Image (cartoon, rainbow, N blue to C red; front, side, top):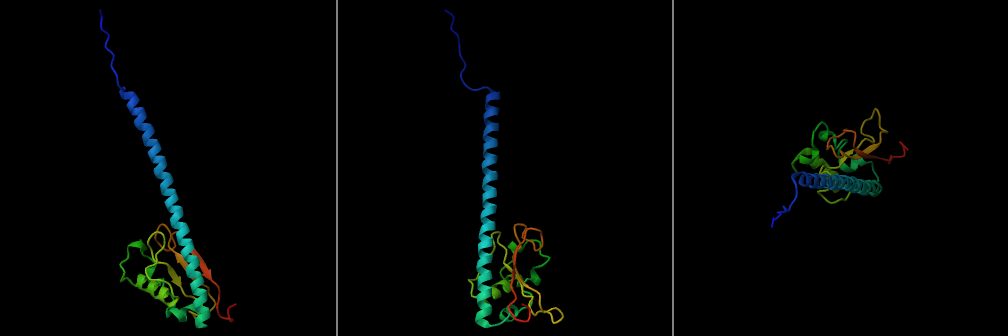
Length: 166
C-alpha cells in the first residue's frame, strides 16, 4: 500500500496575503484614530476658547474697562510670535507667563493649554495705540502646527467694550 503524505499548513503566498490584509486593516484603524484625535483636540480647543471669551466679557463688565487695562498688557501674545513650537515652551517663558497673567486676571484656572499643548494667545488691541484706538482684541489658539499664523489658528475677535469704538 502506498501511503500518501499530506502536508498541512499555509503556503508562503497565503501567509503574505493574510499579512497584507492585516496591515491594511491596521493602517485604516490607525488613520481613523488619528483623525478622531485631531477632531477631539479641535473641539476641546473651541470649547476652551468659548469659555475664555465669556470670561473676558465678564471681566470687562466687572472692571468696567478694556482688556488691556485689566491684563496690564497691550499685547500678551507678542512675545509668542515667531516661535516654531509653542507647545514645548518652559513654564518660565514670557509667552507662558503672559497667558497665565491673562488667565488670572479674567478668573480662569492656571495651566490651561489648547488641545496641542500650546498656551492660548491674547492680543489686547482696544486702546493699545492712540493712532488707532479701535482695533479688536483677539483671542486664539496656534492650532495643530503650534505656530501663530500657520493657517490653522482658531481665533475669535472680542467685541469692543468702550462706547467710543462701538
